[in-house]
Image (cartoon, rainbow, N blue to C red; front, side, top):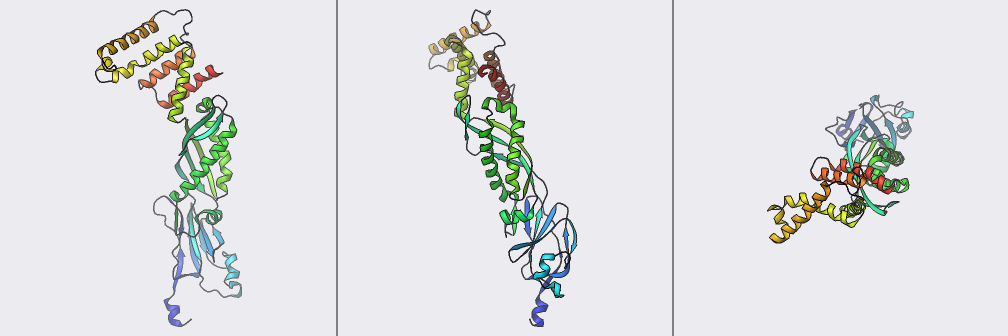
Length: 334
């Protein structure tokens, strides 16, 4: 090498990463046409780790602190660079910084319903949603399995892969848990713990530590929810007369929302009057003294009807309704 070429060379004396904002998990120090000076300083801040890669292989990993790059701190590179023979010259190596901060508030959900076997309904298709948090724990594994030689690797890059892991693990965990759908709303905490235990080893394989996992809601697709509501309504009725009364009373809020009031429901005044008569009879039956064979005020079907009225009136949320309904359904299904 001529003296002119040597003068043109650029040397790095300090290696550090000042993280700009959130969302970056791995950042490659720009090393094009640069060499690292022997004895240079490496600054690794708290919530960071640094990895030296020589000829495509991970050579050394550094935790938080101020490190002087020499034969004592780079034992693997010592033999590669002939430093053991006192050839303490600048060296070429790729340096990657990794963020080990906790990544909070990551959302997960099933893009498509997951089909599971259920003891009450046979086969059901479920949707589930929730939140999880994680942090990068082993940069060597993460570099080898995930990020590779990219200049920048972000949280968003990792998101899709982790989400797929969550959904596949959730399907197998729920499928083997034997928890019926009617009991799921009251056991979200238990489900969350079970799924966290199942997924932690899967995340660990990629150098990622799962910190927290929560199942926030489990629901049926809309068409199955309608079928379940119909089944509940029929079970509440006990006989067709009671079911007819329930349907008529339940249609009152819908009729009131239509333009023109109750008369707007029918195609003509006669139809409106006829429907009004049916509703009037239903209300009269509901407010009249109890007759033999009528459901008791604290019967499950009566409770469900009240819950549905509260939901339709906007007095309770869908989550409150689902949880309360699951408790009442246990009384019906046993």
